[in-house]
Image (tube, rainbow, N blue to C red; front, top):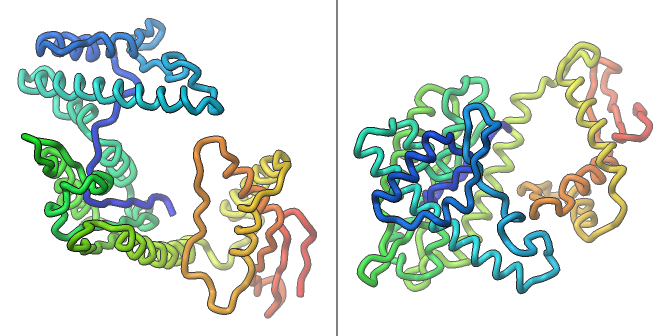
Length: 344
């Protein structure tokens, strides 16, 4: 699968650019000053690199700007840093948003330049993954769109900010109209345009909120349950449609790719030095069961928590079965990834 897109009722906030060409950055800085915004935070967190071509301003790393950022054991400092970063991030976003809109009104920035600063990470991902792609690529992509019925009734519930864009106006919480407009364009214009010219798989579901609790955990669990089943079915279909059932192993590029993955897997597995409960859970998932699996197995965790090493260790131990009629009629080719091969 090349791309899996999840699109709900939340567009998200604009992202903080990691790099800005010096000419644009200085133009944005001047616009911020004109709008009477405090720019000290922006100037502190961005540094100019004269060696870049063309010269550019780069966002400084948190490790350089926040105290003891690389000390995860200090929970007090970590919590304070997280709070500081949220404040800094919101201030930087506000400066970029206000300044870029001002420059757009004056005609100093083109639409494609404005989009770089005023799009959310969600829109960037969809545009990068699905825009200007071939039909063959899009056949291996799938999008799941989730709409929440009558969500406007429940925006006053604090937890609903997880699922939609909420702003406070005159002591009243409402859906952010600007974010809603951008979400509608992405969901109702961009994706249908892609579908019209390709075989992109798109599923749309409507979730109904609890009348009192809004989008409750029970409603969420029901949605995730259905999503997991559908994703598993789509993943199997795409794999079966993509992989050639009978190929000449000596010449097929897919075989070379498999060998490269096996080699990389063996390297990663050599670094795995401990056992954990997650390994047992994966092992249990891989064991045959009568009913078969209807859910995908998802390994998740933060950066550098060992996800790749864990999967490499699993792959090293797993045995897979491939039906190869061209070797011997009706035979099964059983092979351990790093063990011996045998026919039966």
